[in-house]
Length: 186
Image (cartoon, rainbow, N blue to C red; front, side, top):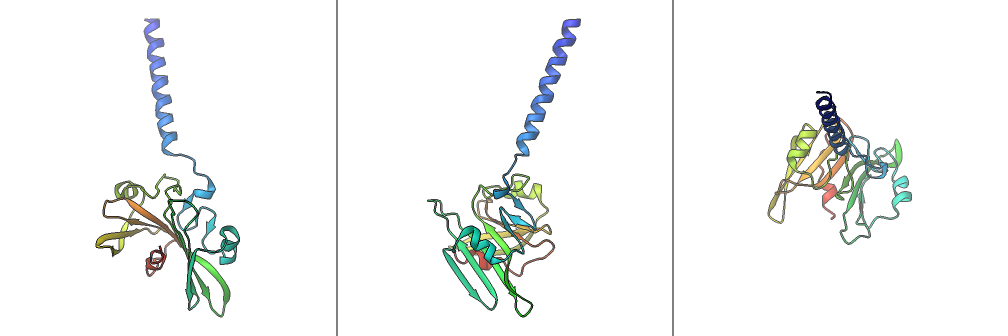
């Protein structure tokens, strides 16, 4: 009887260990440089920071379009995948002449939330981590795409195959008028 109790205790211990390992795998640690924090930051790019801090960190963008105190800046990266990073800035003309970061759109799958949501995640995976509401739809080459937003300051662009193709970080509890300016320049 003593051997049976020891064997049972060993099996329970292994079961507890595998459950702990499984939980740890689900909550993978993401480096700050790739962490998406809703309503706050995309990696090292923080909402509300000036465009000069962004330019100091990333260099000149591959493309930019500015007018009326607003600008879209796009970096395509130097990789063959060419995952564009888009940043929307605006100035509070007359009050603050610094262009401030309002939205960041990432397309690289290496950026992740604490829940491991990333470009490539399915709509179902995202919906299980965030309360989503359909914000807008658009057509690209005849295919319908959708953008789902949250009150937390994170939005998800979903392709027809129900996979995320971009994640947008924006201010919390603010519904941007449109996410369109960030994808027009890919």
